[in-house]
Length: 280
Image (cartoon, rainbow, N blue to C red; front, side, top):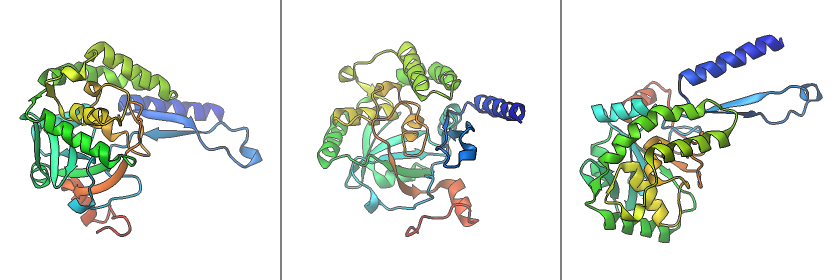
């Protein structure tokens, strides 16, 4: 019996490594049964690739957003598909909602402030995550930062440096039994391959770098890792119930979807994605 369990565990572990899926393996909750006290059960938690929170789909409108919300998106274009495939993620872009129907983002055109309707128009899927304890003053500081760096360039150099880093980054998940080891490994790899960047001297940004830096400038960093090390996928996995790549200072809360996208819309039509209670 023990040998069978060992083989099953090794097979599961091997499959997780082959899929390059970041994993946490920890002890499950202690059993109240005396008969189970001698067992050593472990719970396996995988990174959640779906944009839907574990408790179900929620469709929202602009009025449900707050200034400082993170807006994650994808599009059917080749660039978006490539980013999602390369990062094994359901998102390829992240932007910042700054209130009054406006969105601040860094794209190939540089840092810009657009309307939410424009963001929806160039996205196939768009959903929001929230920092639960973000104060209005800090949200205002983030909006001011976005205005300050508006028209800055796009950090193409940072993206090019990111490519080899993304290739080696999954190696840090080879030990799923230690969250601390994984996060230290990722940080060490990022520092070695991407280096240290003085954010005050920056003239160009990529999307997740810009969003991460906005929270740093507001005195509410999402993680202690440098903004230039963070991808949209890294920010996504800082949500509640997920397995974070970098240690989050705050766990993000799922707000809902402003636009479902092709796959979620199809799933809703056939009854696979049921809205939360009270949601349309």
